[in-house]
Length: 88
Image (cartoon, rainbow, N blue to C red; front, side, top):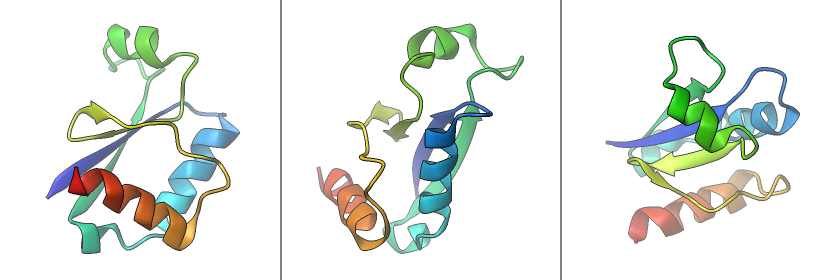
């Protein structure tokens, strides 16, 4: 199983939109587990906020940052985009 980590923050419409689109996918078919991280949470490491403060939403696959996802990409397109990075 691979970890797909979404660095996000509360109140971010891009973050919420990406999380919603990811949750609509059958990530299990790609052996992906979605983990969301609120960079503003008091227990989140300060380096996450420093790194991702102006960049959220950010996806990382097994701790490797992925390129920014287009906010227009959803459904099969998003699934194919993820599959591309799993194959690398």
